[in-house]
Length: 91
Image 1 (cartoon, rainbow, N blue to C red):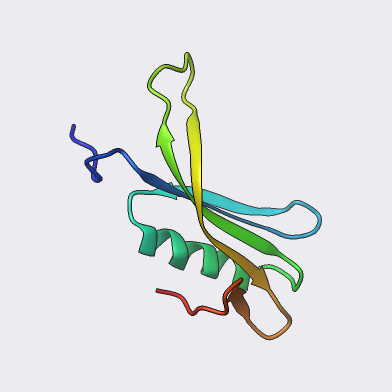
Image 2 (image 1 turned 120 degrees about the vertical axis):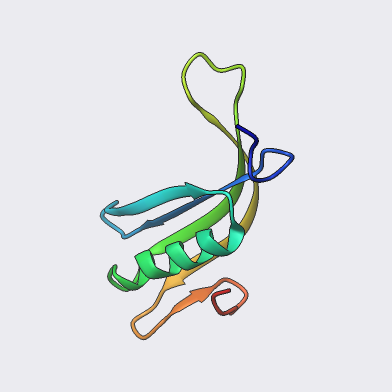
């Protein structure tokens, strides 16, 4: 099976509240990662935060593992909205 991105880049997203509860995922599409992170943060309480980063599967690891790369976006849940660190809107 050929990877969706020729270089093997995947996008990991996480969304957690202050108690550590939340959700995470991996996808081949940066837009999908952004939408899922925004949706997950919208379901959490204000003060929650999230991150989207590039990852690749570590082909040399004995057990499945990811090598984390560039942070694509940092997100924060406010009382009235979810915002990216730069104030961006979801893709």
